[in-house]
Length: 504
Image 1: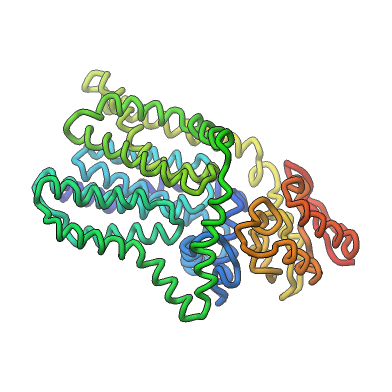
Image 2 (image 1 turned 90 degrees about the vertical axis):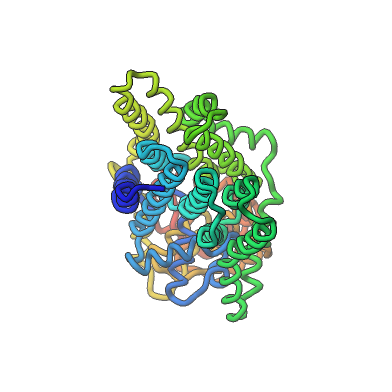
């Protein structure tokens, strides 16, 4: 058990340290309007929700509504702004890092290793698109908390022969249930957390099988509870079909279009190289600690199992976009920290703490530098204007209340920033005019035709992304623009001009 000093440190000082580190390392994210396009969709959903229009009904997506729910809560407290969403991301990263500290301390490892693991996670949360407040950032604190509770249950059995307790199970189930209500790709990690809580107790015969089966049923129910509650509300509203489609059917349609083997290998290889140093340190940790007893050995084994379970979550959608690999980071942070500790143990005892700190600092600085260099080189928000904010300013200057705009293939966050009326419940370009229109479950060409027939006040076209549009949708938009619209403004983007068209 933690001492009272450790408990006070863990409850007050450590979360503040992680929050400070998260805010400092993620500060560049507060300067730009868009880091990842997905953010804009969740922001529009949350904004509509705060005004009484529910996600999936008023603004459709192929994810559960947990992400817009978190956005809506943050915006209700801190206001409707990009800064609020970035602050939400920084807070989620800090809580996940704090929970990682809890994982390390639950097995009896030193405080320094727990603090270092949390800081390594914070630093690497910037990579692979993690500076955006995306789903992988949002559900990380819940998943890591569930794992920490599972590890605590295992440690109590191994150290004191105590069977798992119901409060741990309830907290763990609700945490994992909230994560699944954001994105249902963490099932394997949820099973691992339950296994850590229950299987050691079964092995040591301090938990009867009947009670274990009851706990399994209760845990499954708790994991499903948040989604079931949302579903019940939609049922009462008469919108159950919209809920079922966006939450369950659309993700299944998305997973049917899996990447090919070569393309998948390409994406995985890129992320392996992105995380090269953490992986090398993790390999050193496994080679050193995997077969050993004690806290180090237990952490190594848990980290390996956790990484394997997380890999199932990475692969389950059938696509390998960079932010999916954020799922790897919590176990990888633990293993990389153990690798740093192994290197530090090569130094004389009096210098090990300093050496360990320098190694952790170097790993953190390397991750931050890699992300910051690219952002500073591009200069948006620092040395160059933000194209998204420029487009927003032009639209706001010419838009009357209640008028619609249509973002044909640019960032949907502009709907929220301009406070424009939506032309459709399908506003995400990739699902309406782009490469993933099969997930919408509608005739998207007919929907694009309908939108253009309403003559939105502005149509925004990204010429740099134009070749990635579906040919039929591009033809419909081109015909309507040539017939009914005039080009009124252009904004420079690094990949090409952003065109704003208005009715003649």
